[in-house]
Length: 142
Image (tube, rainbow, N blue to C red; front, side, top):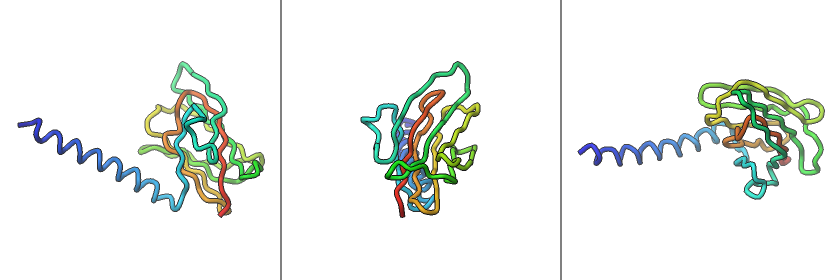
């Protein structure tokens, strides 16, 4: 009897999870969406390009990125937000379009949102792949 109730409950949870993901994307406006992979053959390289990774023995996590436009020029003062259900870390890119987040983070559902008033925002799903990672993020003009 319990097995009969388990399957509908599982399907309900899966549909809620996919709905929640759609709501999160809509919550941030009309953003482009990209999924980060350590293999650039699996990335949408018109939006994100993985550079390199490092492995740490601790919970320390380094996320280092460059925000650029279609001509590879740096985009300064872009708002970069790393977040999951429980935490949110926000900073601005420097004059080189560069940002860096180095904190103790557990790899659980971290996403990255990049916004600049002159560009279409980019929402990157599942951004933490390893202890340290470097990548380029390309934004499109509005």
